[in-house]
Image (cartoon, rainbow, N blue to C red; front, side):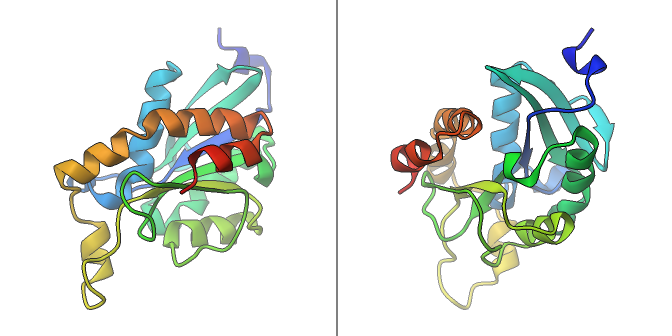
Length: 197
């Protein structure tokens, strides 16, 4: 029996952002999905339950009861999955960690922030609107900037990562896993000093 079966609450929610159809697999915009898949594998937490317009699993990480969530709403409506999940498990916004792509960071670079604006990211914009606050953590995963200002942003983020950029990103998955642990253990400053570039 899962330890969650007798509990209505959890300590933390970690959500990875992306788009659910197979045609989006391997695209820049699905960096959050892929990082969440890595956490699920490392923490032996299959994302095999379906509710709140998402796939999720529950696990114990150190001292924490954690929900891993992959919203299936498409990126621009991510908050419509995250908010009801957090509400059900009674998880406050400052105990939510969102993994998402970031065009302002080079592939392989991470940016950890405890709050802030959406910065033009529609997934974060939806989460802020649904939660009614910007006070949730985000680990932004670099996917690289558009090659030139005229390049269509949607085409860029929905494009596939070339092999060298993919390797730069996947090489950081262990750091993302450690950063999540540090955030849950209230070591934000250490995580930022260690992993932000």
